Length: 395
Image (cartoon, rainbow, N blue to C red; front, side, top):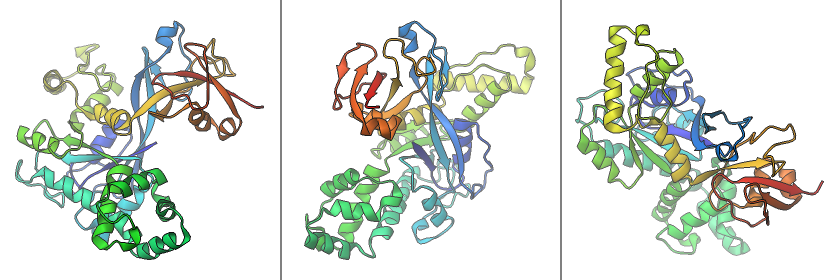
C-alpha cells in the first residue's frame, strides 16, 4: 500500500513525512524544498492477537511492542503542487507522475493560512486554506482528464460498436494510475451525464474525472500548523466534506527525535510522553517539552499518527489479518507465532487473503480455517478485523 503526501509548497509536507517515518527529508521554509520524491515507511497500529492467545508473538513483517502491532505503510512525499500543475507549471508533471501508484492522499494544508497559493509566506490568517483544497481537487481531476481527453470519444465509440464495457476500455487507458475497473464503474454511475459515453462532451468527461478522483484517489486533510491556526480555519476545512485531522508536524517530529535520542519516552499517537530523567535535558529543552506536553493535554495528540491511521482504516476501510500455517498454535513453518500481519479491505474473503499471501495459494485454494474458532470456512467467507486464518491449498 502506498499513501502519497500532497499539497502546495511550504505547508510542512516534508516535516510531516519526517515525523511520520523518521526518514531524512530536506526541510526549509521556502517553496520547492522537495524536488525528488522522498520514500519512507510509517506504521498503523492494531492490538496483536497474541495478548488474548496468551503466548508472545514472534513478528516477521510487522513489529509488536507491548501488545500493539505496528503494520508498515509505504509513504511518499512529493514536490509541492501549484495552480496549473497539470499543465506543467512548477514541478507539476513530476509531482503527478510520482503519485501514479498512490492508493490515497494525505493532503497537508497550512491551516494557519500563512502561505499563499505558491507557498510564499504571508501573515497568519491572510490566506483561506479551503481554497487549497479546491485547487488540489482541480489539479488531480485535470491530470486524469489530460490522460483521457485526446482519445476518449474514439474509445467510447469503439467500445459501443464492439459491445464491450466502457470501464474495461478506460481501465486499459488508466492502468498506469493504479485505478481498478470497479472504481471506474463506480465513477461512471455517479457521473451526471448520458449513460452512453460516446455522446459526452468535454464537461461530461471532466465531471467523470472529478468523480473518479474522489473514488480512486481518496483524500484526507491534515490541517497542519494547528498549533498556530485560527480555530475558524479548522472548522472551515471540516466543512469541505473531507475527513480532517488537526496536526502539528513540528511537534510530532520533535517528540520522535527526542525519543530516538533517549531524552523522553513517547509512543507515536499517544496523548502524553514520559521523562526517564530530566537531568539529560537543558532548560531550553525542558521548556520546549513543557509546551508540547501542554498541547498534547489540550488536543489529545499531534494528529500525525492519527492521519495515517484514519486514511488506512477509515478512508481506505482496511483491517488487519494474520495468516498462519498451524491454526492451533498460530505458527508458520518456522514455528514463529503470528509472524505476519496483512492489511485487507473490509468485505474481502478467505480466497482474497490466499491471493494476498501468494498467488499459488489463491490458484490452489481449497478451504480456510479460523484460528480462533477452529471452524472450517469457504472461499467466500468474509473476513473480520484481527482474524487469524489458515489457508488450505492443493500441494
